[in-house]
Image 1 (cartoon, rainbow, N blue to C red):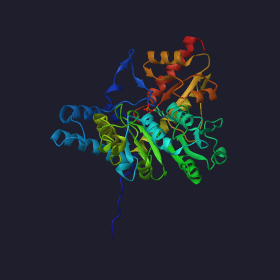
Image 2 (cartoon, helix red, strand yellow):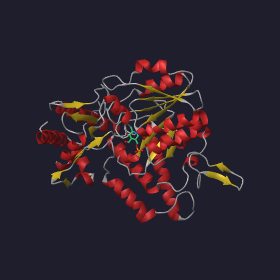
Image 3 (cartoon, rainbow, N blue to C red):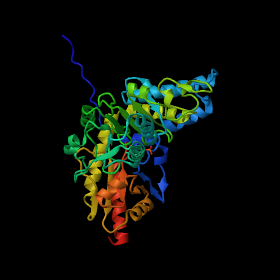
Image 4 (cartoon, protein in one colour):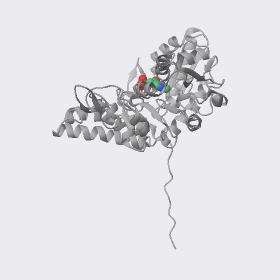
Length: 418
Ligand code: PLP
């Protein structure tokens, strides 16, 4: 008889207090109050292991990559290429050649526009975007439309901040060359049905680019399962350093594309008459890359993977529900977007208080929140608001910090008589 195996109960809840110990910047007072860092959609804090990884590189291995046989350069190259393998696993890219290191989501999207876009989009073609895009996934395509004579089309929004998917089939035609959209809105928190939109794009032969700046840091994202053509994201929003990030592209697409920036490392051979290109992914990594930063992004990916992206997502879902409930108790406060599938980005306004004034009062209370249009002016115009206040959550945030936000808003209401 085989004995029954008792499996340990899987803990989904995060040990947030232990996680907070990993982030030195969280343990400070701002204006005499404990910091409540709620500006994670702009950039995340960094765990000590990531800070150490970057410092360790400079202290021990600092050398340029790919270019020398000496020991330090070999160590730097191994670590840099090792980070690429970690990022490949993190997004489940099939091959490392599909992972191009960039300085962030903006650079990744521009890379696609300047290379794939210029090579494939012509007058009469159509580019489909959505009304909830960050300027980084809007302005580059507007430039492409200007250069090529292609037409921009937009998928609109429903009152709850979800995309009008019912219009998708009518907007997609055989002239649609690309559908570029965000996985998660950096204003409304809406999580878009990526697989469905990508499949619709593919049905008309269009290529799909997903802006993963707000999704890859917060939930499991599987580039193969979603059948993405391109996926751009930033390292600094996922516990990694500024100047780090990646663009995933299907290999056959990247192979057919011209280089983006030209210079050292992206060539195979150069003569006075011309040049041939290096293999993927280096064809797209001209010049000295952000070596220390990408290595430390690899450490950030290890850090998040050890915790588990499902657990990160579950924690943020729970805390978002808590925050929405608590903010809902404040008279005169309006949250923008109420999508059933949403992440921890909460934008709001309080009647009678300018969002910048509100953010200033919050800062006096140690609460780091953002006010402005969050690089989404067309979306704010659609909301009928020039600006909003935004609190955005991450794996280390707590209910106590949400309470500090709520207290700060109540204080501002008293202060401004709102
Ligand atoms: N896309 C979205 C949805 C974002 O929220 C951001 C940054 O806030 C970006 C793109 C641009 O990211 P980065 O400035 O790191 O390139």
